[in-house]
Image 1 (cartoon, rainbow, N blue to C red):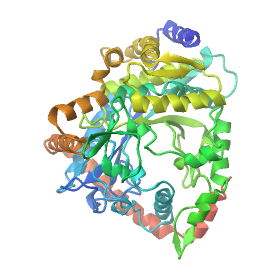
Image 2: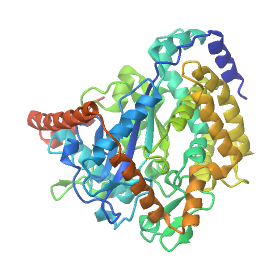
Image 3: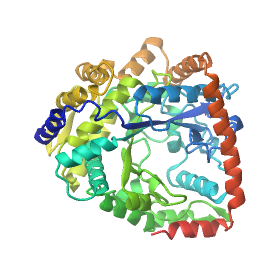
Image 4: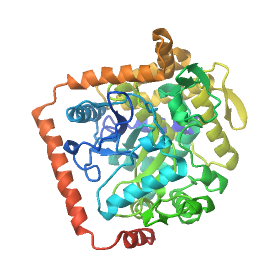
Length: 525
């Protein structure tokens, strides 16, 4: 079953190339809700000391004005990524006054839809487009679903690796075509095996009852204020999270057979009207409710566990057109919960394992995904999210039932050789060490973050809210007592100041109305 991956790995190992993987580009995006002293979603604007969310490349907002997002630049070393993420959050904490950052993916006490302020990006056309897009998400899916926080892992392989790998694979076309087709193969395999990520790193087995706002649920009651599933790993990735139901109803799913089929499938969804969304209206009483009434407003609305990303997005260019123009530059893995047990929300062992796992997904044989396998992929993800730690849980592999634990063991055994290859370019053996930590979780599910969370809640007699608040306050103490170098302090202050100037410049440069701006954007082909 793993013959192709083993053959490719052997060819790479035979090169004895100690620096082959040293210059990967690694980045992290982490979301955290700002909350007030009572533990509810903050109603205050994005702090001005953090700069303009529209133009600050390191500190911005996601769906809500209260959903802060930290973005690291790409680094070649994982410790550099984590250092930058740590310092970014320390700088933010210096400017939060009496608020703090929520430590878990699932939100805190939610006082209804209107308690969630949609992110504001100023009066420029590009800023208004971001705001209206979010307004549309609220009308389509509800605002509560949009404040679930996550961590995204951005990764690209080194240029030298691609040159060597394309030669080993005897590729005769352009290098960029080979890179793009290889990334699409990786993406298909990540989807096939992606259930392993919520099993190992899922940290949302419970949720505040206020999140469901009285809606019927199949979840069990943990206490008066908390729902949970006994064997859940990541309810965030389950069926209470963000879903693209309209695409499913219309038979439109992203097609990952090739970069072109992916572009074509998303373009179709962006250009196909949806009767239900037409009922919402686009402009009502002079106000935009959504960017359009199509199945997708824009590409980002399509939820997926991993996305191909262009290296460069030109101006206000559509992402699909940037992918068509310059190919895939990196992938964005989106299925990570915020790690409640680490102040940063993620740690080095997670990142080392994920890098090795992505390389394995690249090397493993990756045929197109047919309809039956697509259904199995979705079902496996859902089962793992809700019942991943159940020792009796079986997943669907090639139409046959297989125990999650057996499949997970197999995958980690195959990843071991990849870790040895990566350790050649590292100090010590961080990849093999990270793999051993994950293998221990497979043998003992009680070591997983989701099990740890439920265990602490039981031992302390606390529901989800009190657990999350306790961890949030612990992390707040960590960051407020963390020294930030004068150099890093100046760096973030300068970025904040420049972002405010950049937003003003963008507002001053607009020379067309917002409707004309949107028309031009969607006319791009």
